Image 1 (tube, one colour):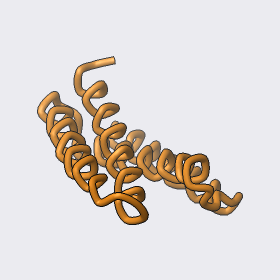
Image 2 (cartoon, one colour):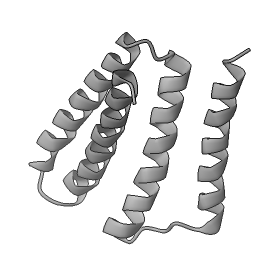
Image 3 (cartoon, rainbow, N blue to C red):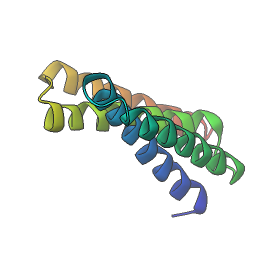
Length: 108
């Protein structure tokens, strides 16, 4: 895996951590907002590293957004007992399919 994709994966982890922390900050201790801010700064920093390493913006952002949506939905189900219905699963699959089409389309 190239440095660009490694940075993208860490950006995804940071963004999902920030979103999970945001959920905790709005329902619990306000101290979680520190984790929210730090996670988002980290995520955007790593996204910029992936772009600086040559990943196309459309591809990097598409993967980042799709993975973020999917992981957030799954972790919300596990950690916060929020719904994850078959229709939501189909939506996640469509998002992933859309990102794959963007990647395939960029080869032309």
